[in-house]
Length: 241
Image 1 (cartoon, rainbow, N blue to C red):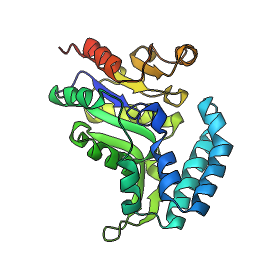
Image 2: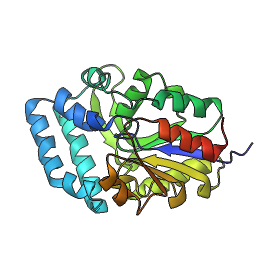
Image 3: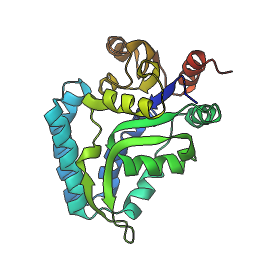
Image 4: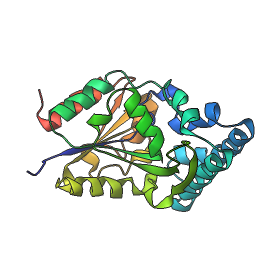
């Protein structure tokens, strides 16, 4: 049976609260050694301003992620060090209910994130909604099954701001959904290519100034701290009650 629609979400700042920062930021700050965190902070200082402005080149997108993952491997990061950090990161209010609504309606859902898939997996499991998400598209680490040690990573799994649209279309095609029927939800200019059609892209803004910027790339923008406007928007497009 063909699905008429699918839904793709960004993770950091979209499923999480804006105040909690990105999963990778929290891991860098709270799970890495002091020296490794200093290295990651230098990378963030180099790339973050351009990222927030939506001006990272593809080469910079790859370099920032690759060099950060190399820090994780070099520092001997393990799942046991990461898990308690992820466990403290909250979801936006109303997110769990929204994801369960989509699951119960048999709507295919993916999380497409410029981050680490292993972190997102832990985050979704912590909040009891891993079964609500069909696929996680994000950088995959090679984790030793016995020690939980991050020993390598697969660059072929990298999700970048510039290729979020390609990953969105790939997910839709897996579920036999027309690529013009991808509903996309994000919270930054890094999500301006999430999904495919501008009219079916929802932006979650911090304030009115940010909302005006997002409106250039997203068909609908709301200023919100919680997920309830997302649920309302999805219900409207999916004809859910």
